[in-house]
Length: 299
Image (cartoon, rainbow, N blue to C red; front, side, top):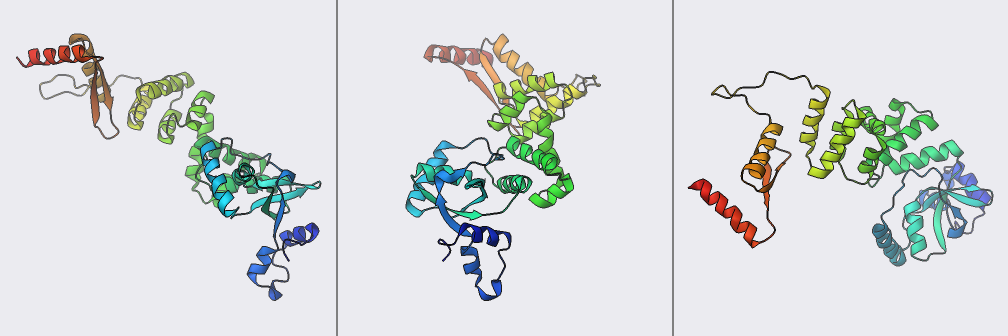
């Protein structure tokens, strides 16, 4: 009965899906909200917060759909004889790749603001949005749906502090935001960079982070130094000499290996106080020369 039901009746039921529920089972009521419609009649969601789709993942989903069909219907609304997608663009794209002509949908009644809110909230709940896409979604919900951070927190089931941390990402320079979207740096790196007041310094440390593979802990240390450049009284060792900071120790060691021993070396600190000393060579002759230097040191 469901698939042959008229569109007008479907939309009415979408507005009040519990109507006449006393004479129907829950399964019957839900099935009456689903319809098979032509894929070509579905327009994409102009409010879609996701901007990147993994092509390989889409192909895998398309293969699954070819075998099992679309298990979870899309959600659409009727607009001028066509349908506009509210949520499910990934499934729609995969269904097209699989060669489907029709697809199961839930038809909802929603104005532009309601559609925006449904699309954004539905997508935020997914785990494959990057941090910037989530931040933009939060910002749009606040600005375009007139939600406060407190109300937004309730809608998406996230703490206000979490929402605030995401929104702060949008204050970073565009280049850094792009780097977050492309997974060049982590959310932890980004949160450390946010604390730096000067955008130029933010970019300098961002570039250094990518070039040297800096840990979050190291970026936090650089951020503290950038915000408080005032020199402090250095710590002392037992013999009264100035104690070098972790960053200074790394620089001294790298300079010693590179300049005094003539070796191309790098010091790579880890996230928990650990790290690596990497000495590079291009051929057997260079390796033998390095061994000779260390043998002389031992002698």
